[in-house]
Image (cartoon, rainbow, N blue to C red; front, side):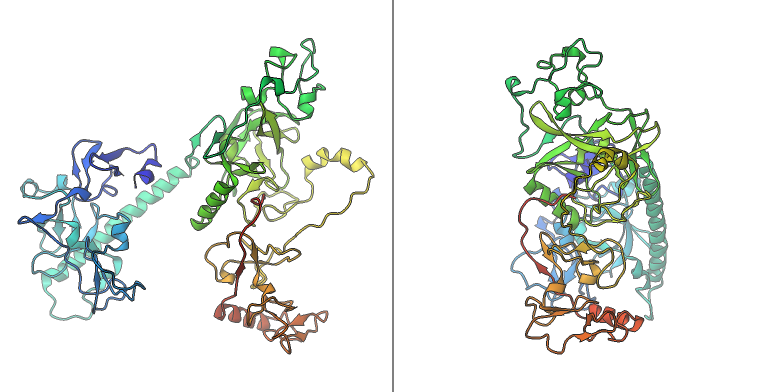
Length: 592
């Protein structure tokens, strides 16, 4: 929990002097029952003795299951009133003490929270947890321990000190608690009405704060730690060359612009940066942009439809150095772990660039302003790998002349790691529609490749593994998972595969496995992912009227793409889970 609060460096924290726990100082964060010593020091509610008459007190557990609301043999939490049927939790009755998932996760009651309270022989009663500073002085002077907090009872308007073992949260549907009941105590009925009104008031206040927070966050980019140079993580090492190993160029100090873009500097041609102690031009050398951090003047801006971006405030010429792409340098194993964690947490933004075959730059948690450069199918910048002092580094260079006030972009294709097939919103005339899909050449690429077009030499065509832009199950576009099998163009929505997260590692789609026994398929339906092995293909497929393509029984052979057959196919997909075959990942992480 301490790590969670430290993520917001601009917020004031109050820390426990007995353990590493820390909270924001607001009532909505501090655990009820914590004893505030100073503005930044407290004793958290975990250190309460919870004793009464010298004996440890146990929580008062409810007599019904929190999941199904029925009684019976219940599994009771040792820290709060929660009770569950073991079968509702899909577990056996444990031996010894047991805590519910909320208590194990460290969730605590907090101030201004509506709760149900059990006091003596009274029924469970709605109340509000109050900050001790805001209750009457005679209530403050009552005897209480660390972990105890005052509650205000609705209806009777009384106060009492209570602990976590006798309260559980009030939810919105609890306002209908007495619906259909007769002979309800008037005070209790009044308490329910007051609790419902107060719950709605606090909910409206919370939503208003969230709206203001989102509005403030929309005015500035998400937080990250600014660094000036690459930071190795774990076992990754940064290579440093000996002076005797560094290339020496043929430039001279008397040249007008030695080692510049217009010169014939051998190091620049080979994308090596000159070393100040080796270069013949000495201090006049103009090929030390990485070491001297001679970046273009830029600023982070909010774009339309593409989140945050980077804009140049100065005019740039073709070939000019814009900035170095810096971040944490991680190995392939750490890269795969971070991508896996990101997919599990539904994170869609990645800042990874492949540095070498076994090293990756991740500018997500740490980096500089270059991490905000967006993708474009018609970019005005490109990434280049340069050797600086014996190690490989990545720089952003202008592809063409760029006017001041223009947003900087580069093509993520074959550079970035971690992106699945995601829709592209760059708005270029040659937009491919998806990240990682090769577009037709834009204006800057055309100028860059003009010399290549003049050469009449025939190039040997290379096989390209292209995929369809629409889901093979439902026929709609969006974010798709692509089959890794060679020459298979199919792509699918996660929901159409009955998956909640993308498959990890190499994955082959269900089209290649028999829909009956999951053995390798030999006959495929051309209109849905159903397929059959040699043992089950007899009579399973029929020749359709559409180019004599094979179709299964889910389709009308006279009109396999008709609305009726499509609806039948979707119903079958919803009723029968699609079998997914996963294979362990091998080799280096894919770059995209």
